[in-house]
Image (cartoon, rainbow, N blue to C red; front, side, top):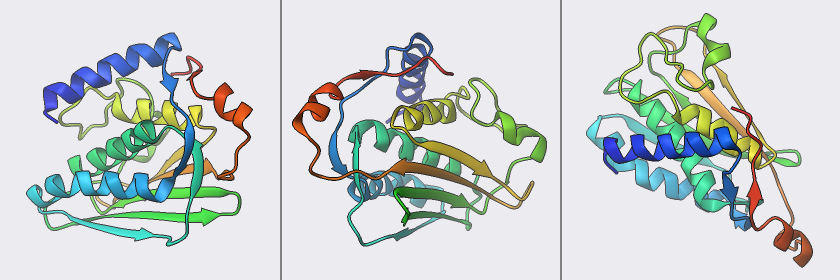
Length: 195
């Protein structure tokens, strides 16, 4: 997808989140396949940037009741962000593991890192750090909104400038055998206008 197309999509999604009209098409999915698909999509860009893309995926099934397209969008936004700030020759590692009743995804890079003073603002719309390059500062805000719509949480940590950063997404695991009524009620849900 071109930069212009990504920017347009971000603007449209930003309007949806602000108005509370973002919708999810929920179904029982395996989060492992969603993460793997996002990694496959990111590999050409990683190769072009000469950045190593490593994965540490738990071999077990990770059943989540959610929107596979929107969760892949979360992963794509996180990976695009990591690639943007990771120099050639460095690496990005994606981990997926169980943490009790939750699935936990982490995207860690060895890039330029984030200043401590900016950490509280990373997920705010139109906020860009001192080293911001392309983009409008919407990708991470949209990712946060989508994760929260799925009943999850997203966090960021960085030891400081030039020391990399880690974004962690936590999502509730679900049974594959959801009652039909729950599936119908959650087929389309409006998200709260939080951003």
